[in-house]
Image (cartoon, rainbow, N blue to C red; front, side, top):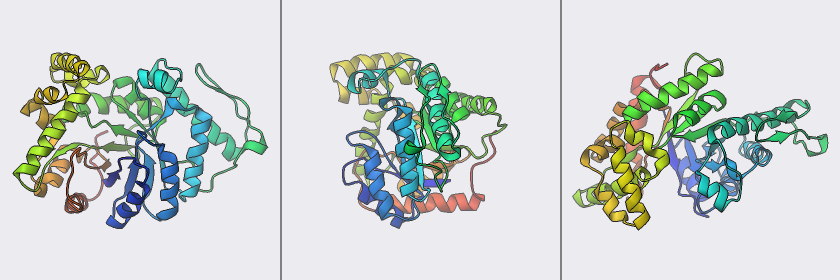
Length: 348
């Protein structure tokens, strides 16, 4: 299991990639929120040597496949083969109203989108004519003047984020890995997510999940003292409530019989009652969605809950902690993985 560092995505966060490499993290991931992650990663690529660099996640539907294929190819080149293209769909209002881009059948569109990206890369690598025609995207022009040619480091791996069954199946079929949303539980992961990934892998001609990355970023509730734990507890409950108020994530609640609470939280979110929403998250829900443990037991709990599934992990902690707080936990995760003999158990 690799241990990753997820950066907030501020303008100067490329510097955190340098720090993360020095601390021994395996990967550094930047989101697309208030800044474009690609130029930040380009700078990070010139300042680091070994750590993997990726987007978690870039918004696929805010761009066309050719644009994304080109920038991903460039970052693979700049980083010396260390780039991972992490993508997701976002939700309809952001794509149509913020980016003024089309939206329809997101899982089918994403499948075709990623196949188009791969067709473009193949054309550059082999020199074969670009002939991709689909229901949503058509790419049929690539002259030698505009082709960057073969990438000496090969194509970057693609990881896809999702929650619903169909998008998860698409990840298993056409991506190289999957981002498990933080708003998930062990039950939903095993009863819904893994079967959907296997369905996708089967469609692509693979019998198991071997070689397929599964990245999980569980909520963590911990702290150096009781006051810090109370801050962490409140922050994580608020974040769980925020996600639970989103209709697209309702299947996770339904798996536990909590769908009615999701409806209540949606109403409260429209009123802006954010603190009240957090108080609706019960202790039972908190423990299903989060690792709740003192610092010395966080690594143990991550491995116990997800060690047979995740190939990559990190800590989702939406609250401040002292500098260096997570380093002992990261070391313990690594030590526990080594003692188990490496990666996840076979769950094919």
